[in-house]
Length: 302
Ligand SMILES: CC(C)(COP(=O)(O)OP(=O)(O)OC[C@H]1O[C@@H](n2cnc3c(N)ncnc32)[C@H](O)[C@@H]1OP(=O)(O)O)[C@@H](O)C(=O)NCCC(=O)NCCSC(=O)C[C@@](O)(CC(=O)O)C(=O)O
Ligand SMILES: [Mg+2]
Image (cartoon, rainbow, N blue to C red; front, top):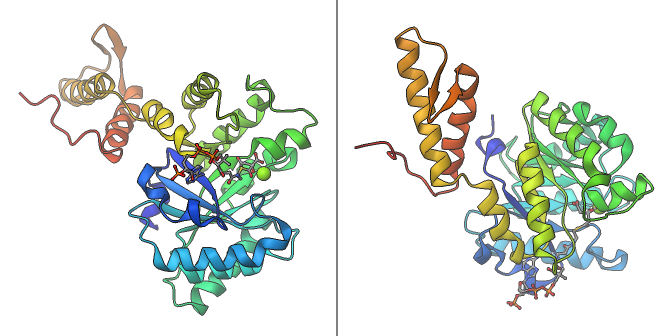
């Protein structure tokens, strides 16, 4: 398995691949991933210019550990094949497929990735895929999409296009996204891939943004697509376990290991009932804190 498949992706920040001011140094804000956009942020008559700029950025800029995802144009357009070739030639880590409606959409893009890896001397299997789901049909087929390819590391809800398809609108309350969010997280977990929430477009409503991030964190998402560096800290704070949470998780793991050896299945930690069902969650909290760079281990050491 490509080791990057499960990497930390709390924040995936969109930027227009055509704008030098955005693509030159987004790593200074420390998002986990950047998503260089060739799709909706780029006007129809600027697609060639955006591709040119994307290729040179990928070839010349050291993005210092940020994952480099390229959002290609949709499969209904004349642009997407050349987008894939250019992104793979440049050295992208992953391709984001917009408006994914079926497992076949993923396989179709994968074929061109395979050809491009050969053409440009990239290691076979090195370019990963994420699928953005932006329609009712896509949501209904989320599990098939999640299981479509070994290269697919996750799915992402795209709320703007999705609510248009649903004949509603983004309200800021999340009501209109509830069913899609729930269905997609369940599908992603069933398939063992990651799940990302949609962008929050009101940059002046940071309280609304925080509420939105807290909701999707509790729903089980792995992270969120974002549009601006101002949104990074809020997401990282909510998606990174606190010291209190890590201490509790360490205690749970230690107690379960010890009690198992003593033949005890259920007990309490800090007054809370614990049994084996809590083990994986506690381990995940510790791993997430380590991957986030906030914990190196040893919190319970004397
Ligand atoms: C919104 C705005 C114009 C505001 O600009 P402003 O300049 O007013 O922002 P400021 O805060 O003043 O910027 C302070 C400093 O940060 C720098 N800075 C800003 N943004 C940065 C960034 N993204 N990356 C790196 N750097 C950045 C800026 O250059 C400045 O640097 P400096 O001058 O040095 O101080 C800008 O953010 C922006 O373009 N965002 C990305 C928009 C985009 O790509 N949309 C397409 C994807 S969504 C979609 O398609 C819908 C979807 O598909 C989604 C789904 O799939 O979920 C669906 O269906 O829903
Ligand atoms: Mg969209």
